[in-house]
Image 1 (cartoon, rainbow, N blue to C red):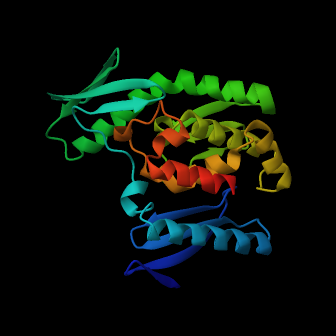
Image 2 (cartoon, rainbow, N blue to C red):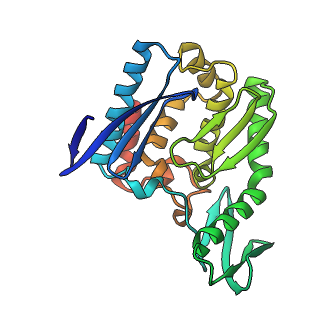
Length: 263
């Protein structure tokens, strides 16, 4: 098995052939795992593998990609969360069994303190409450973009706390979006929605696919780059749900980033 040294640490390089429609790269402890659809041509497999591997290496080298960033989001008592222009306050209440209720913007979670996985179970409950609250807004964005540019037959919408991909679509027309997108600028959420809607017509990332994405999102390259460089570092605590892409990058980084985008 191949390996590479990055910042003084050795990482294994694993290549996997899968039945999925898209290629992914993920970081698992000390291994860079690149998954490629088995039905792709050999040339497309090699090109995509090299591209994803190089991106992963750069991300690890500059510190924007690490094992902790690809774990599910954990919520805690007293946390204030900003998402899609709204704010939620999380409150954990000791109890004999788990439960929850949403009172305005206050998520109250009953937590069984004796449970060995109390943190995970409480976080799962908070996640579900946030998704339930924001699903109408997300669905509105999906329908708006779809009606304007794609006219795809959408059979369903799910939001999951994914740790390796930002979105997916099934052959039956069901969309799945990553939970972290709810804490990102709306421009990024819209890009991922358009990307997955385009996949309902074209499965691979060919010229026709990107042409369809560009019709809906003319600056999709800028948004893709932002997502690649910043996506996994976004957490609820950063409260960027109401900000724009340039608002997220401060000081001199704004001018440098804008300059790179124009080149």
